[in-house]
Image 1 (cartoon, helix red, strand yellow):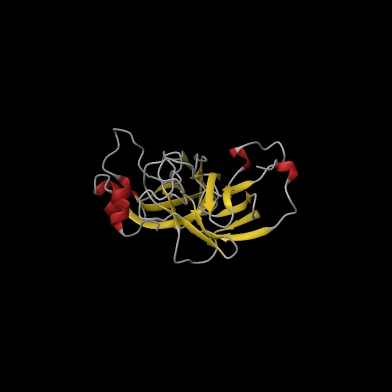
Image 2 (spheres, rainbow, N blue to C red):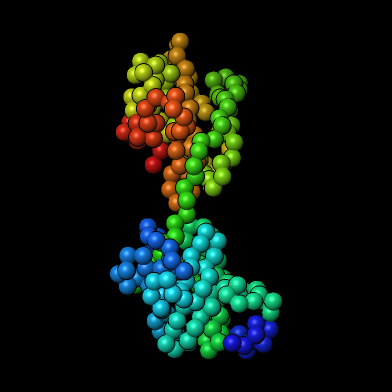
Amino acid sequence: MRHAGQRASPRFVLLAISILLTGGVAFAENIDPGSDGSKFAWAENLGWVNAQPSGPGGPGVQVSDSDLTGWAWSENAGWISLSCTNGSCAGGSYGVTNDGCGTLSGSAWSENAGWITFSSAGPNPYRVTTGWRRAVPTGTPSLTADKMNGSDVLLSWTALSGATSFDIVQGALSALKSSVGNFQFATQACIADNTTATSFTAGGTPNAGDGYWFLVRGENCGGDGTYDTGEATQAGLRDAEIAASGHGCP
């Protein structure tokens, strides 16, 4: 293989690749975990590109939260390197990146085709599936409430590892008490959906002699986090009960 510092003049090929996330066992590569042939991408100049050319566990493409590594194969272009970490990055860094949600960018390299630019745009009748899936946030943020002018309350919470946004639900304390802590009957509204901030001003005035409770959860493109604390002292399952209320965040 030509050293990275001795590559020919750049030639660019656009490779459209549809990444479908699914569960599965990760081998040396984590492509086509369902073994249904979902391992091909297409380029006008390269033809079919196989992301699992040697079968499960062989040389192929490995998808992670941050990038794609390993090798793909094209009958027209030969081996395609997804990252300079396959060999050495001393002659120049390159690679296909993943934003953590399956949106790809960056470039791969082929001795025969030159640079190959990756894109996740556009629907395709073919696809590459992978066993990679971004982990959803675990744990619950620490939430505080501070009285503001009038009836407004400033909610603030700690950042949560892996979370890119947050949901907040609200309900009446009287309903939570009368239902013995059952959030299915006590949840009244989703007051913040997918907010990227770590604070929120909640308005509204509770009935006389009543008050509001608030819960926050983290989420990312891998899915929703949890309202549950995981502690043995917690009564019931908050996630299931809030979902059953019909007033939870989507």
